[in-house]
Length: 366
Ligand SMILES: Nc1ncnc2c1ncn2[C@@H]1O[C@H](COP(=O)(O)OP(=O)(O)OP(=O)(O)O)[C@@H](O)[C@H]1O
Ligand SMILES: [Mg+2]
Image (tube, rainbow, N blue to C red; front, side, top):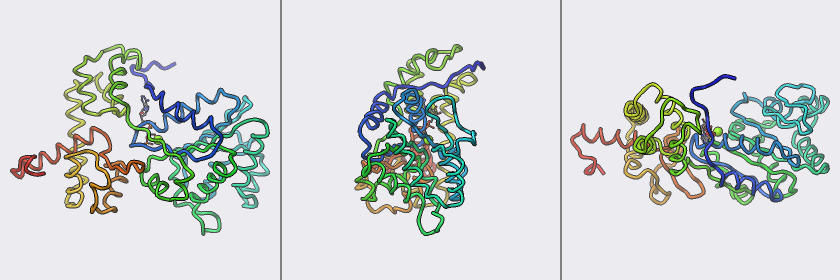
């Protein structure tokens, strides 16, 4: 086995995992949307759930991460969702419950051929598969990550959007026929918002937010990197932990990246580089664009804003800011916020510098 000088770890998420379990232990009645800021750990949490439940015989978990899949046509969708049992590829066999991370449903070659020739209705094939499992006393669960990647694909008649058809199908499977649990995650806040404002879907779905790690978790982690990351070469004192928290907050990916860099650089140098990078990113994003400048200056005073406070701001501009991963949007609470603590620093320092260069003090620039 390869020995790394720092391992990947998984911190806490006990409450979130229990929330997912609670959803799965009820009778299927709604779609569950998992949302949250960029890199908050949605995919990791679902993989964990998947691993945990793999051992439980009463569930058949079908996990599809669309980020791993090249999707440009309807046929790509068929390939991603259906794999024949003798195609082998991507299938872990040898257990009663076979699964594939690449194809949701295992079919016989004939059905697959019929699907490809468009002589079979893919939704009917899925439904039959679920009914077959339920008869055997197994509860099917579908988990799809990066679901918004289906946007832009159409049904073969070119009239209907595949994503909407699939969503309606999932409503039928959950709320109406109670056949199957469906968990959908997306890193695209605008997709989640679209679902949330669609009254038909909102009434058939539950929304679960996954935020960055909390302070207590980050401190517990960083006080014992030997245990969590198998780091032998150094330890962190309280002051350093405070600096890391202050710089990147509970963003696990950034914390891990700092831990890696600490093998080579001082914490001061790392923090200063992170801030410089973020300032440069904001300078680039706002370059010659007054509207962007105004919007971000507003956020530099307060990193989260509710919809009432943002009244009058162009929805297009807000949308663009979210799509560019500068802001995130929480549709349930109606809040726009800066995408992570390090970016908060970038935005704040960028405007502080601008004000100083224009001879303004930050306070008078409000
Ligand atoms: N609970 C955790 N403890 C430690 N590290 C974590 C935890 N959750 C996630 N991570 C790390 O954070 C990084 C980002 O996680 P992940 O890709 O799951 O986020 P995501 O929310 O799915 O991102 P995206 O918005 O891009 O889809 C990964 O490197 C992962 O190892
Ligand atoms: Mg993800």
